[in-house]
Length: 514
Image 1 (cartoon, rainbow, N blue to C red):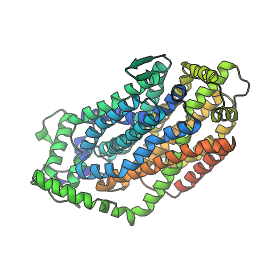
Image 2 (tube, rainbow, N blue to C red):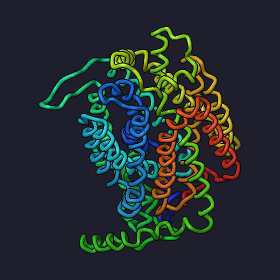
Image 3 (cartoon, one colour):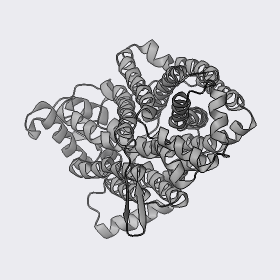
């Protein structure tokens, strides 16, 4: 725990940030982080909502749908290391600002797409751009909070992601059922393209808001900018306590083991040359990850996240299409509404143009999106329930194991669904539990790894998760074509493997930042 310091004593980070308390400033940075976190959800999930209405305009096959779902994650995989390098050497704030604006441009470009190839390309670049800000905002928020509040902040991030997850189907419900069609020159635009364009607003807002926020004080201290870090602490203290900056009780800050020398006196040219040198030596940042005590935990977390995200996104990204198909069955009065019937219907492409057009019209009805809203609302409710339970050490320590065990049972139960209601309930609780799992993994990572590799480790963990998403969305159509039960056996096996791995992972989410 952070100690109380006298006015003239030099303080470490935990002591300095604890003295700032929790107040208005913390609320402001959480609010500013919300557009960035929701933008990530929008970028990763929007195609799954667009597909039921866009498949006629773009003439999508089931494999096209899988590839479209995978493109955003492919971009995230390739950009993870570069974004991590930029964040851990040049700062969190520049990534949040420039990354937000760049991503907004690519989201708008995806809205201008006229065919599936163009949409795939721009969604790839969307993933390339949004990867950095999302990982950085997690480190950014963690580094503005002390031990007392940090584990709550990590789950608040999960709560914000859940808000984004419920906002997306709500927007889909309000916009996608409307028949919008117009031309601009040779370019044709439909409802789903307008929907994509609207989703660019949060990412532009994220870049704009972070212009007015400071750099992370933990990052500044790690790079030797102690005077700037102290100014940052004074600003936080003044806003939280509603007093002057001079009233901040700590007069100097320092790392116990400073990782870099003071750089305040370097000229712009010297900093550029140093940045070039750091870039050439950048891979050395990963050196601590290749030896004890971090190597075992790193590999463990990478594999665990790979398996669990492959499972969750294999369900989540196909869920709007499955719900839309079930809704179409109900409208037509089809007797067989089992999961096997739904998967068989989606894998067959021998429909006439009239049949396909009729189904697309059904998909544009508001009822196709209400189930998705309920699923997201249950996910949000799950985080609200878990929040107060985090104060119990026994629950916090075993939360990951419990969640993965329950998720293993739920994912197997999806095979036996035979109505939209049973699909709704099982998938909602499954995604809720898996969201809690992902937040727990991020909480462990933030507290366990040192500052100068924290973001890059977060990005590597997310990269393995996204690699799982890409793999899952390419393999799922192939499993569907093999047999109805094949994808569910595969997903249940992966979830069971994740549960077994979690039994050997022990990290205290309430420990001090390294």
